[in-house]
Image (cartoon, rainbow, N blue to C red; front, top):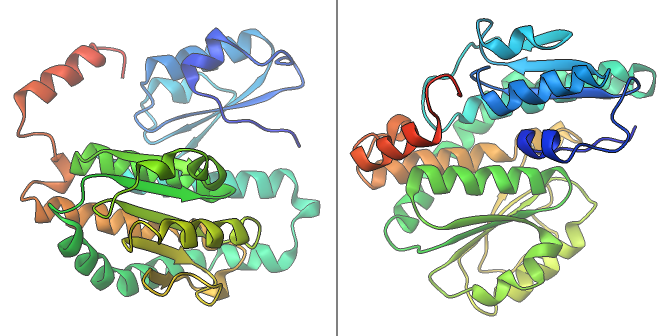
Amino acid sequence: MPAKAIDSLEFTGFPPPNLGEKSCVITISHSGNSITTIHAARFARSRGAYVISMVGRPDGRLAKEGDVAILDPGGRELNGPKMRSYIVTCFQGLLLSSLIGSKHTPESLKALYGTLPQAYRQSIEKMEPIAKEIAKDWAKTVDCYFVAGSGPEAGHAYELALKLLETVFVPSMGFDIEELTHGPLYALTPQRVVILLQSDARGKARLVEAAYAINAVTDRILVITEDPQAGWPGSARVVPLDVAQQPLNYLLSPVLMQLVCYYLVLEYGTNPDRSNAHSPALQEMSSRSFPPGTH
């Protein structure tokens, strides 16, 4: 079915032209109190749309604004970067889409859902030593991060770049792979890192081509992939995903970079859960960005 992701503020200011009684709008706010998301839910209902609210806490105001609320079973995430809640929301979206289109969802795929928690634990155990090693190599030597992927991995790329920005405070940008090749690559230097995410055959060939091109400027390339034999440059750091989880590897691919973010912050000597708490100026900026009652 046609679907589109839209920022809450843009949704209310520039709504889809076909928004109406045959629409379903999914509003997402981990705190449940983001005022723009609350406004988006109210606006959607005023147009007759069916509204689903995904929230991290039952007492968040958004939980009462939709026709139904889907709660994060882990409750509200208290640390600043909100990394766990991102994965939870991705998984809830997967379950929701599968249940809506249950007659089109293969039983073999449904059987994989129950294995994901154990797959996450195994991924963390396998990738944590790699993340520590990468963090030691990158800390205080990298001046910019580029993250790119295709399909669902493009969404992960934007999210992971955001996490690097708000925890490590080094310029970081997320792209879909074709967007990366059309201009941003010309900003590469040997001191800059490129992270490529690949968990689906669609887009893989372009990711391999991009990696080959990038290698002309830098060998600081990290590839997280379900196909380590796809022809990645020999100097790239290639980390394989668990192919047993195909086609759900895209839910596992962010794990390594989330761990890298965590250990990079430790390398810088700050608190990963409150990486900006040491700065009164940043705290003041946050309070101005989100006045009381708006977040």
